[in-house]
Image (cartoon, rainbow, N blue to C red; front, top):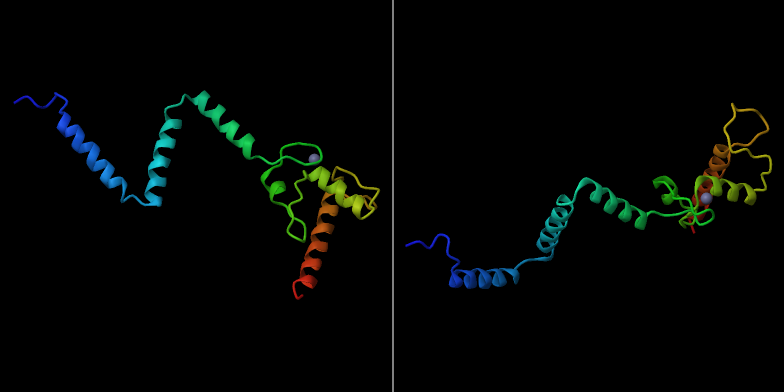
Length: 143
Ligand SMILES: [Zn+2]
C-alpha cells in the first residue's frame, strides 16, 4: 500500500466533517483565540517595513487629536478629564491656555523659567486646575 502521499478523498471528507462538528462546540473565547492566532500570523508574515506601515496606520486611527490645534495627543493628554469626568481632548498647550483664559490669568508664560515670581507657568495653571477639580470633587460627591 502506498497511501502515504495520495490525497484520500474519504479522508478529506472525514476531516471536513469532523472539523465542522467541532466548530459547533467552540466557544467565543476559543474563537477569539483562533482569530488572534490568524491575525498575528498575518502580521508575522509581513516584512518589517510593511509591519511598521500597518502599525502606524492603526495608531493613527486610534490616536486622539487636540480639538483646538489638531496636534496628536500623548497618552496622558488623551486621558485628562475635567472634574465632571469629561475628556478635555486638548493638548497641554491648548488646555493651559483654555484654563488660563477661564481663570483670567494673563501674565502666563509657556516656558518654566526658574521660578521667577509674578509669572505663572504652565505647571502652575495645570496644578491650579487640578486643585480646583479636587475641591470640586470633594464638595460635590456628597450630593
Ligand atoms: Zn492643541
